Image 1 (cartoon, rainbow, N blue to C red):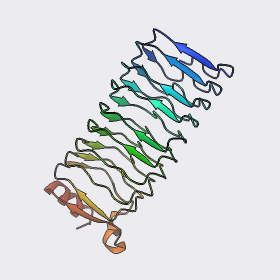
Image 2 (tube, one colour; image 1 turned 90 degrees about the horizontal axis):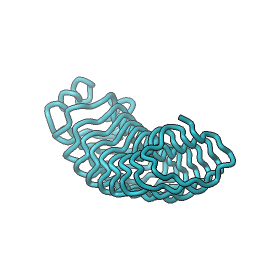
Image 3 (cartoon, one colour; image 1 turned 60 degrees about the vertical axis):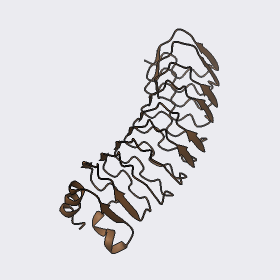
Image 4 (cartoon, helix red, strand yellow; image 1 turned 135 degrees about the vertical axis):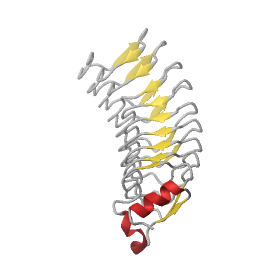
Length: 239
């Protein structure tokens, strides 16, 4: 559904009586500078505003529950997210190069696939206490991100969620965590990993490409707090 896709002359649009903006609706509208939303907008999905490189600021109205589709909006600096939002979806803000700090509002429960991937200027992000799931590749390639605080309540961290976040040196895994996906923290220069008791699923090499080199390189030390993780480490030659 590319209703306005690649419309180079589109500079401003007002959307009224629209409940959902679907995939690729405004993709490639590189001169689009102003979008005004009216109620009853509920969802922005897919790659709705992919590559709208002139967008600098946008306000999403209250009532919208899912936001995605601003991938490649390289000049987007400000976005207002309503309290009604429960999910930042597929590539919600990937490759938004202007973000240096971001506050995910309370109420958001899920960060979808690649939500902030490639946000190379992002230095800090505050995650809400309501967050339960961090999707695959959510922060992959956020090379300026120096610290991440995972709130208690997060249950799942997806595959390669923090891969290539090379400035993060410490990570505290919350007690609520149940699943860590493959390569979730791959390439991070962290030295100590304490895996919570509640973990019951670990992907392949969640912390490093070659787990077996932990002791030899003295880079990372894994502390297991339950029988499942203890068994996993023994099976992979880490104990």
